[in-house]
Length: 239
Ligand SMILES: NC(=O)c1ccc[n+]([C@@H]2O[C@H](COP(=O)([O-])OP(=O)(O)OC[C@H]3O[C@@H](n4cnc5c(N)ncnc54)[C@H](OP(=O)(O)O)[C@@H]3O)[C@@H](O)[C@H]2O)c1
Image 1 (spheres, rainbow, N blue to C red):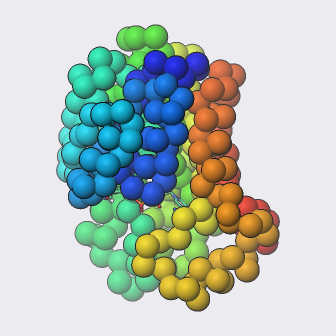
Image 2: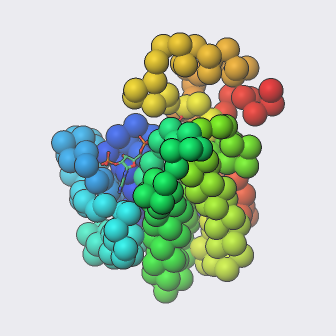
């Protein structure tokens, strides 16, 4: 896909990785719709940095919200060529504390909303000139760290959805995933936990976010690649 002039929806585009993706896409001539849930002020800034991009608010844990968001992006942009399922929840959930609300929050946002957004976007793209769907999963999706099982289960499901949708939506729509490792530490991470992650990661984290953005661009632009997951984890999964 040639990016110039294409129309993209980035979920969770107001902050952190989503913000970096929105800005990088806009710099390449893509018309971006910035989705946010709680971070309105941040989304206003990102939308301004993207040349006055439309901002779309939605709590994607609500039934039907993902499909509604995709249609709102289609209306705001005059079509849709690219969907990036970036929004996610990542909460520490020791096994004995996991209840159905916790489980549902992770599965509803990280897996179910991503699936229904992709279903709606895939339909629009197939009726148009085709498109690309990109899912943000996790380098440890199939090798979960203790204490985060609902999160990793949701990301493992999203890996399966990526491969399944790639088959179902070919050849008009390509579906791939980027699986980040420790790219940006959670905002409430302690210095000790950040140091421990650094020691466990062979490569310098300084280039992590740039590499993640490059991986996303590679998968968007590579017309003979679908159903793949590109891991960007500084070699952490090698240890
Ligand atoms: N950061 C990393 O190093 C890392 C590592 C592995 C995987 N990943 C994956 O990469 C992606 C981006 O990572 P990140 O660290 O930038 O993510 P993040 O900061 O944890 O969250 C991304 C976005 O999710 C949105 N969100 C939260 N709850 C929502 C809800 N109920 N409805 C709609 N949107 C909601 C937030 O929007 P609002 O703020 O507007 O509510 C936020 O902008 C995620 O899928 C994450 O799992 C990241």
